[in-house]
Image (tube, rainbow, N blue to C red; front, top):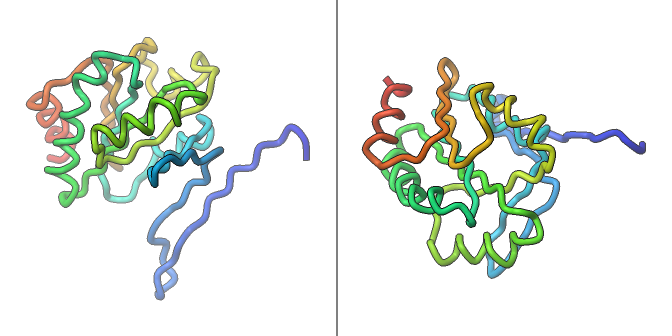
Length: 173
């Protein structure tokens, strides 16, 4: 079927038949030295923005070429370490160009020993998806969404750790 994109969602089930985890199929998986990065178009990626599973998500849009992004990245890693057992999941969404994933992004992940989930958003038509992330997003990075099943906040700014944790706590309350 030409011209039709199919998005496949697979579900694992517990022995009681209840859905326990959703797996989203990437467009492509890049791999280097045992590190994998999944790449998604926006249509598939938006699932990461709409989960209502009892977890609070911190989604940071960044790129290896963005100096303010690199400055705040350790704060997201610290938040991930301190809150991973408290129902918080940090997802770092790289906006690096696809041809640089294996030469820049994955070596960066390895060098920095990133522990947060890093995924790649490969959708060149940013003008159509930026406002779907937030109508308040002008398109610059870093940008962050913090949300759970009942509340969502968007930030187009750089964070220091104390401010990032403070904003997370307003959602966790």
